Length: 485
Image 1 (cartoon, helix red, strand yellow):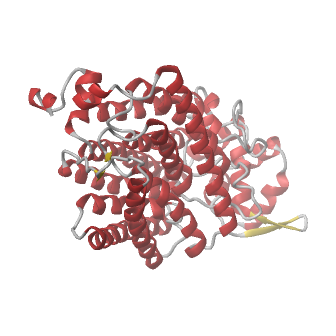
Image 2 (cartoon, rainbow, N blue to C red; image 1 turned 180 degrees about the horizontal axis):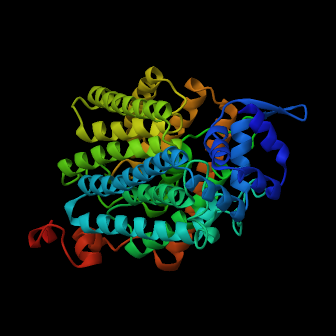
């Protein structure tokens, strides 16, 4: 295999590469499946070459014609098809699981808010997944992966496997493990998640039209831009010691959390939440709905993290499943215990957010942190989310569902945890956190601020009291009696 790697590396440009891989189907699959996943090194022209990294890079940069040549050869060999099909099927299943997370977000947010705002919450979740997938198809996927030569500002990029190629060539274009259609739908589910985080934080008082505009800009433009810094071989991936975020503790979750923080600061708290007599609890209307949502998110997270392996590699996918589960239960236990000590009562909402805190916390290092340490990561995340929720309330930052604490605060912790327990460089992790969170906060502050000046971002007082279901949508969630709640 190393000899084959040396022959490949020496082959040179696309034309020679195309000739090389079309020798026979076994050669084509050997390069795709064997070399691209190899951790070996080869000596070429006196230099050590990482076989897997080099081959994957060549495949990513190859022309449509070259990719089609590989594709045709693979399809001519039934034995070679089996692992390739398995990789594709697994990533597609993972995309389905991540989609279920959006059902979890909708259910959790609905349960933790008053029932007079349920329709509004659900409508926003319908909008986010719809506009998110569409904009990611039209532009975001291309901008997310601009290539090495455009590492900071991806607008106008034209990676050979981006949206432009998707329209005509994606059936024949593929990475070493999956088609680009497969990668597109998996990554599109991630893109919509960032805006969903904001939805919960601004619940019960944000004007619907203003949120729809902001969320489209966030998921369609800001998220792919930031994602390209890390997953698109941008500047964070090219630090001397690369920033490490396996599945998005910072790139997805902290990004959404700090965007939410900016929006909440512009929007202000719900009326009656903070009074001269202290903090008034505004309770959610259905803890069963919230619990169902949290468990749906737990389920979907196996796809979020496990799918980020981007291949059906049993040893790594199974490890990621285990670390994900252990961190989640660690987070729940940590939040239960700390909340019980601090508030003198067992708090179900804190327990549910503890699950999510642990999941967010392990997302950056699910493949790099040991199972034992993943429990500790989760326990710490569970404690952090409790103190973060309490601190934000004292600062009069009103977050009805705890999204800023779960995704923003615990996203930072999870990214730092990879340095403490997974071997990543601490300085690089701090740089990545500062870049992503700083951009998300400033971008959202400016954009939401402009929307506030232009059309306003908050409903009128009487509409907030009446409830957004009737005020914005003209229909209560649970029948006529809920219109009076």
